Image (cartoon, rainbow, N blue to C red; front, side):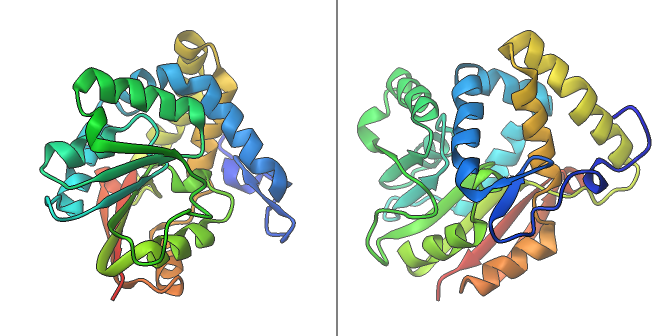
Amino acid sequence: MTDNADPRLSHPAASDAETTDFGYRAVPRAEKKPLVRAVFDSVAQRYDVMNDLMSLGIHRVWKRIFLTTLAPRANLKLLDLAGGTGDISFGWLRGGGGPAMLTDINAAMLSVGRDRAATRGVISDLTFCVVDAETIPLPDSSVDRVAIAFGLRNCTDKSAVLREARRVLRPGGRFCCLEFSHVQVAALSPIYDAWSFGVLPRMGAMIAKDSESYRYLAESIRTFPDQETLAEMMREAGLSHVSYQNLSGGIAAIHSGWRL
């Protein structure tokens, strides 16, 4: 940002039941999914390269910690929501996990994930499906783990996603969410803001030929619920023993909850 104002204070509130946030804009709820789909259609082919650049490669460390939290085992079935290009599903299988369903609402992202799975020789171990995480087309109590990594903030009705995750979990199953969160170290905030709103859009323009999509990604992080708010949303959705772990000073966080 070019001034000292907090950008979160200048965007329109999206509290009306008929609107939701799209970055710092309030948009009609029905418009968010097409807008998000357009963002990921644009960035799909460069998504993995940009993730490395956006996080200086740290997202790989976060995902390894996330997979440890998921605790893959051969007798457990994973539903990977907003799984996109496949990192979590691939890590699950690599760690000895059982059957995995790689899903995403965006067909372009899922296509990249399928190509990566074929290259890695694991395509036969995965089921691919275009799925809206707010309305999961699976029976009740049908999976052991539900994972969503860097996808929940792009969903229109986050509470619906959490309720659906609990519904499809078997008793004793676990929901885990890895997401950008709210920085807990004050000294990091100005550096993080400068990186997010100054550097990332320029990198998006140079590498993905799309600065606006990366500006949205930065804005979507700032409008996402903070750690305690998301934990309470998970409890309200019926998940138990909810906890979270801050990563890199709260730049990201892993939230976990169980269906009992």
